[in-house]
Image (tube, rainbow, N blue to C red; front, side):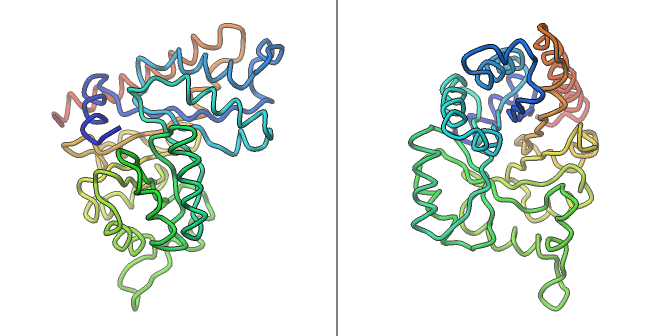
Amino acid sequence: MTRLQLFDKIKEKESFLCVGLDPDLSRIPAHLLETEDPVFEFNKAIIDATLPYAVAYKPNTAFYESLGSKGWESLEKTVDYLPGNVLKIADAKRGDIGNSSKQYADAFFKRMNFDAITISPYMGEDSVTPFFEYDNKWVILLASTSNAGSLDFQDLMVDHKSEKLYERVIRKSSTWGSKKNMMYVIGATRVETLVTIRALLPEHFLLIPGVGAQGGDMELVCRYGLNKHGGLLINSSRGIIYAGDGENFADDVASAAKKLQHQMAEVIMNQKYW
């Protein structure tokens, strides 16, 4: 999916909602556990319920890897089920030496046909560039994340205390790709960093997890993160996919997604972003 195609989909749906597909067998509605593939059946219901409101989906591979080969099968079936006009993000957080990264790129972009993958930039440029070898695919680099431990390293001052480490990561890595094939993960609970980040990345898309269950404020994220080209994908996982737990759970899931989409549409309309 190209940058223009993504922006067109955002305008069409008046939404920049990304739904995180993080299936936990202990939280999946009980009636689905009796099916042959509970994870896929759960994901399928989530996708069907949220498709009118979402422009992207982000399976976190940890929830599939933990189930072994059966989990990978469920993941592949899920990606195949997703329509071609949504952005399919592998939340895999890979990042290794070049020849290993090439194999990861082949796995997620060629074998499973994801559109994007999350990458840790810690090992530097040669660990990321293999993912740019595919056309119309996206690298989404971790930059300023929502977890409490992010403060251990990301806010350390570098260059004689002239900038923070996450700022250096963004400044350096932004030369590896472009606004057409790179995004950055910015946690919604660290909204104070968005002003600085937008100065560094005025036109790149930002993937924002942490709205909802983690306490991020969507209004503030939109205020400081949106640009004239969309520029945001706001991810919600638990707040949507576990909105209901009975046999009619998908109705509650749809309502939760619709509520977020309506908030996004209101922001777009009131601020006249495009």
